[in-house]
Length: 529
Image 1 (cartoon, rainbow, N blue to C red):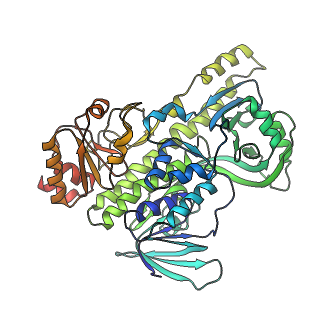
Image 2 (tube, rainbow, N blue to C red):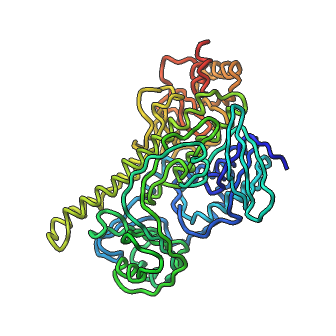
Image 3 (cartoon, helix red, strand yellow):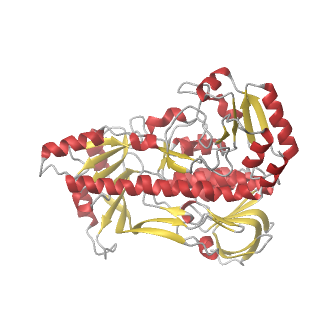
């Protein structure tokens, strides 16, 4: 077995495996180092957005994803928020991603992270250019001008292996060894909350919650917790559950009555059996940079926050999709240095916005609501305020990560990448290309290749882009923009990246060569146009 690769991914959880598959499908020789022989059976990262399901489409394993964790017909994957206790009379639906389903090419999914990892492990085993070292850990990392050396240590005591690659990516979690070895710092927003994670079995709770059909996760807002959620989620419908909640400082797994805690949160006694009790610190952390030379970080190694809104694993998958094609482009010789720099320029602001504009804002707004309103103080005022929350679906529709203003987009400098936006069918530079209308022809997704894709109804425009791509050595597919697509996208031409983000939506003032050079990070090529 070779010890030399194009890319080594340290950490074979969902993000690391997704990145490896993205690279491997492009012919990049990639090695994944993962310390666990089998996925850890702790339910987390349950909610996969429509966008994450699109990644599984691109990675060739969406069907396996759908069958890996079947949900009963009446099960549902929606969410709910209640006041005081889980069984309170005050409740409303929340974070319903069905509000944005028409803007994506795949449906959202719900399954525990270990099942997701199983899907990705099976797909990785099918990709010839991938090597997966399960039961190994990356213990030492050093880089020079030409590559990175990694010392891998086996859990079974086998002799260490010295591996080398042109690039290393740390997908090794919030305590990333790669991040530490690369000297990358992180900025933390401490919330001073110790959290408990309880995994338990209870058919009784399933029976109690049949009054709320179609739900799979439940937030409880209680004044005692100052805006921090008590959070229930289904694992297997009917039997298995997880529960996150703040607990007092000094709590250990031995000195606290977790059964009483569960009973209080639900609102009445119910039979349950614990499978796991763990503790974690609630914090928001963002790496100061996503790159140090030939070393990159992604997923929780680059950013982490509490599981509010189900953003975490989905952000990690988008990291993988973003970085994967860019590394492959540079390794393949057609991507320029600026393309790798654009990974941080695009992804880091998206997480910062997600943390500030969504996760931490949830905490602040819930705290303010709980301090202002209470049914035992002024029931009428509380119910009026609660009703306005009941009607609010804005959180899902406002979460629209985009790269407007990215240095490798046509509108560089005009905006800033972030998570706040709006879902529209119009093709917009820096935004994800949606289907062409709510009932539009979804075959457009099949036209997007592993290089750039031009959609235009003008043969001369298509010919100009093909010539420019040949001169630059950039892979490009040029295809017709059908009349219905043109109407929905409101442009006669658009250039799309491999990750389906729009580079250019027909803005004037650009030549084909200049656009392709910018999109490929080939700054030196701009001088010839």
